[in-house]
Length: 226
Image 1 (cartoon, rainbow, N blue to C red):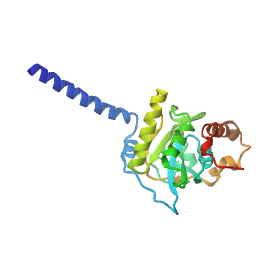
Image 2 (image 1 turned 180 degrees about the vertical axis):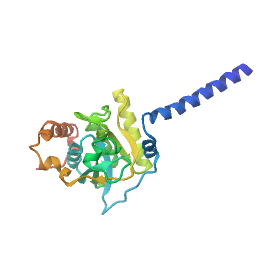
Image 3 (image 1 turned 135 degrees about the vertical axis):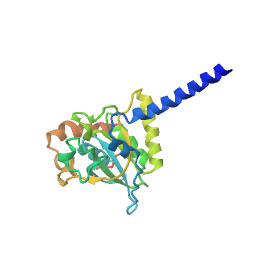
Image 4 (image 1 turned 180 degrees about the horizontal axis):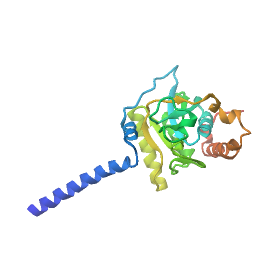
């Protein structure tokens, strides 16, 4: 009986240590500042004239802006930076990878026409979900995938969809799940970039093909452009 009790206690101790190690592994490779950001209390952005705001990072913000602006219910998309630890990040500074920020978008949408869960579906459905620290040719922590949540309901929605897709693909997804803290608007010349610069070689080679691939997958969500 004593031997059984001793074995049981050892097994219980090993399980607790294993679970603790999993939590440590989840933050593996992250600095103390990054770990604190992951554990911070999220900031809730209130509705403004009935419009809500959501925040995503998924590679080059020129590409992501065009994708979300094509959606029914999305009023505007703004390019900028989020997820880092420095104040007033710039394009040049974030591109060094030392600010912690990723290129991100602020999606301003009508929750009566499109909900947050659908925006998350669009997020996962418009990128290479398993590419770490980048999308396509854009490589670096500033191009990493992040979904920002503003409350527990959004967090649980993201976790559920991420786990479901991971099981379907049988692969680990790259997207980080972070509490939203602050969005820094990007420089003027980054706004509406694909629409204003259709002749750009990057837009022609990378952004437009990514947008068209998304449109073929989600035709029911697109605005009527006719």
